[in-house]
Amino acid sequence: MAGCGEGDAARTALPGSAEVCSQGLQRKGRCERRRLKAMTSEQLSQDLLRLLREEFHTDVTFSVGCTLFKAHKAVLLTRVPDFYFHTIGQTSNSLTNHEPVAVENVEASEFRTFLQVIYSSNRNIKNYEEEILRKKIVEIGISQKQLDINFPKSKNSSDCSLQKHEIPEDMSDRDDLISNDNYDLEPASELGEDLLKLYVKPCCSDIDFFVDGKRFKAHRAILRARSSYFAAMLSGCWAESSQEYVSLQGISHVELNVMMHFIYGGTLDIPDKANIGQILNMADMYGLEGLKEVAVYILRRDYCNFFQKPVSRTLVSILECLIIAHSFGGESLFADCMK
Image (cartoon, rainbow, N blue to C red):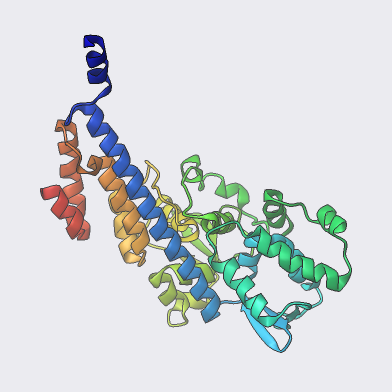
């Protein structure tokens, strides 16, 4: 009986022990990350859906019956590459810039839903793409076997899509810009993962940024949908709205790279080499509330252990966090640090 009692004691962690504190920290960390991911993912979906509805910077028009739908080639290319090649890819050479691409054998309401799914779904949308293609295949008389041969399935489709379109001349220069640190950053969703490919392997870009003598290719539509600063810059009121090459001041190439990863992918981390205080200032300037939330999450996690039983080392980092919170006006974080 004594032996059983000793075993029970060994298996039961005492309240306030290091083991219990560690378990509490892990639970808190998982909970906070789930909350951040859900919030960031939802915001990315809403921003892209607004991009579709407001139709700014569109570069392709579809005709379904008597209804016209405007969209963005880059989004279609990275999200539904097979559909892209069966529609735009087959006709792009014979159409003028504003001539609609006819989509037959599909109802307008169904195609509208299809576009909304492309722009906003946080999940894999291969099934939606295959359903639309199946109807189009019937219309043009292409067999499923031929489709499989011409357009590989799964992730190879996206790789293929990026290879068949615009390859930037400065790709070799970008090897130093997109570091392994950034590749490890977790996108908020499938949508974020797909959009991030447009930045990491640029295609269909229509604006270049120069920072620290380095060049970054981007997409006006996505920038405008995600950032209030870029929305103002690209709306037509600024001189930069009509420029293909824009120099950004007061920001390093490391910080811009972090910002672009968030704009495109809703990434949930910040590389160690980035200055988190500078990231917060940049996020505030460019109107990226979601990136500020990510930075605050990093501060709470890495500097404050989510305020779980601080030890002397944690108290020092909490003081540093307090200074950062004061500098960017983070009242909630500042109050937590002062407790």
